[in-house]
Length: 355
Image (cartoon, rainbow, N blue to C red; front, side, top):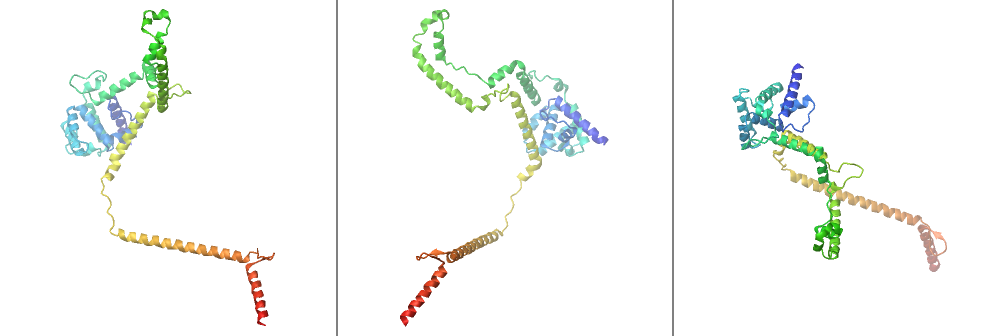
């Protein structure tokens, strides 16, 4: 239990150190529990490898160029480069690949990361990120990220919030250049003075200017209907798309993409390179059986329809025989009774003529 508590405390301290150094790979993660911090630093994943690469490149900037020449698929070569760097610093052995891959005991991994973080130069720890980098030296990723954060903080300050709101909810001036000239000519003569001579017959420009104004307003209305983010909500004082909401949405998208990348590289990548399943050579037999079963089903449906038709015809005949109808004599008879009467009359008729 003591060992586990020590690992959690060390993981929390290392995570805080990475945040203090401005590591871009832990920015925006917002991990709260020590267990999640330990999983991030001690569980084999592509994200952990990127963090280890950043730490090694911060200790030795020349490694950044070596890592840039290696592709993401050359993971073994990259691990060999990092284990060689750790061996040069006498922090691990040349065959300690498990320590680089994240398969060693968690406490040993955390101690290795702590020793690497202690080797980061002090100039990288205390340098102000907002200051420009030396001439000819490309700023690191951490410097660029911190510069962007400070720039966003300055833009989100109350002094610039009014300009941002104006950009998100622009109010376009509807007056065109021609119409502004007409309005200027119609100003009081005390303000016009010597400019009055340059304006002749403003009525000639009023009609086309009015038509242009109406078409412009119609176009603006159509554009405003299409742009949902320009439609401000009257019930709320803030615009529909605020910078804070945009920043939060970008942060959530980054977290989702990072989680998907980790899941894909740890769980799904192996399935993407699997060979397709081999088809059985007996597939033709299954097709024949399926066709025979389909034909049998069709014959059974035909027999069912024949049985239904026969039953319907029998019901109709029974109804005709039992139904009483008029047969031209003013009385109702059933069909069997009528046939029996006709048979009796025919017999009597024959007996009379035969005598």
